[in-house]
Image (cartoon, rainbow, N blue to C red; front, side, top):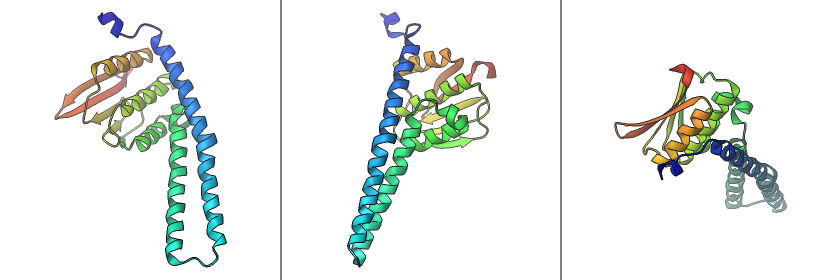
Length: 196
């Protein structure tokens, strides 16, 4: 029964391909559909404002709030589109990818120096950071990165099933995933096997 709970060899590759396909779909939908719709809404609001002639101060204030909200929504969709797409580390470098992930998930970030990893493990590291952040409450995690590790501190540890999946995915990429509880916080670390 315990063997059925463990990921089988090859499962992580199939899961990774499925995850990448879903992220590409989501990124395209955000970039090609949602983003342009929000931009069109902003332009329409501006055109409507211009048809009013001399707007009352209250109307000007409402249009300013609407414009600001739409600009924020466009920026959020752009960030989500970039964060969701596969190849985050390849496009932004590890430090840039960690910054984008932290911003997208409301996490704190401290980079002493970005981890030095080849492309495939670097990409896997960013995917695992994203996955850990997905199972945490938004804004509750803090990320610390240096040349040898990425540490994520969160209020709650990941459950045993998720921990096993993260360990297997890390192992497949030549990384190690560990988790411990210290002073009431869960500490999850990702590091290269060679950096020990």
